[in-house]
Image (cartoon, rainbow over all chains, first blue to last red; front, top):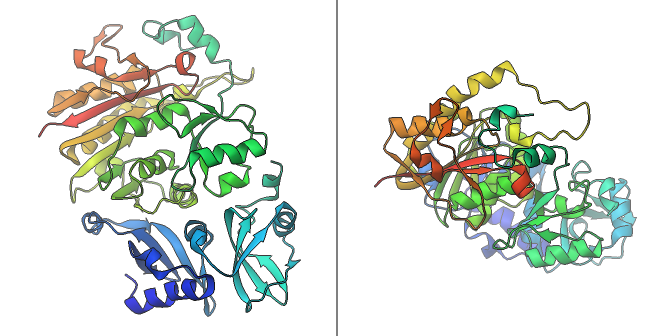
Length: 151
Length: 298
């Protein structure tokens, strides 16, 4: 189980960077496993399962990348709707650039760091990284593929 | 094909003809990620028009003309899951409740597990078990994509799953010969019987007994296969009835089916097996399926 300090550090980061309220995670447990943290809905039944040999718990929520911690695409897809800042609306044209592995220029008045990418203002795709006036995608190109733009 | 089942499959010629038609694409909208009505609108904007496949369920659809359902942004976002109609019916027949403790004994690739999470509103806990570590990858991927946050994955042999605490609901969607999935779409497609299929009933009997033993009193288990073979269906459920104080519960989930058989050749089965359900492709245009809803007396 992640410590209270760890919870506060990780969920506090989401609050500070994206404006996602920390109490969004009140119903969840956060567990640390090696270089990642997993999030699962708290339930009394978890006690019953505590003696089982478990290979995966809930969803992977954060991953340590070097000295930094990166929220996962799936975490952002679930909780990114309540973000109030560092959120970038993109359209199909910019999505196409992202899927080809390229960066695209944007005019954002925020510090360098992660931004939430929202397609057509309504679909939360995951994260991009904003630096030097450009955004590049943090979303796996195996999962979000160029072929998906056919439709 | 499947002439040996002519005795009990109704309208057998229609059944055989149906095997020459391609399986339609069925999708299950995922309310854990999006309102189904909004999904319909999003897909319509892209020229994909879904048709309801159930009068009572607002998440199940046919997607005519959608050849690669895995190649849409909405798929990546977990707004829907491509899943056979009959496969969806298994979770609906079991109907796990909010805040319950659920075991999915053979969970990968996770379609039914995620559907149960949806029916439970992501509450309680699902133990999604699958023996093979290589299957944990697609299982975990499906659950994450669909926003399932109430599940853990374990890797026990289903028939040896350890008893720690009895479950409220158990899904035993067991390994089977998969006859119900066969469609003769190309001339080169032939249904081949492998030696391994003869070992399946023994394994299935071990799994159904274990699943029943893991169930709490008044709990409900669903045993299901995607095969027509009575040796993997009625015979297995008969074996449970012979060895445990189990009852076959009615299946009232708002869809039609054929009752389980009580006779095949010289073999006679318990009359109670009429309460099990058989699904045939010419009746529902989906994968052939069998299910038995089983209760443990209190």
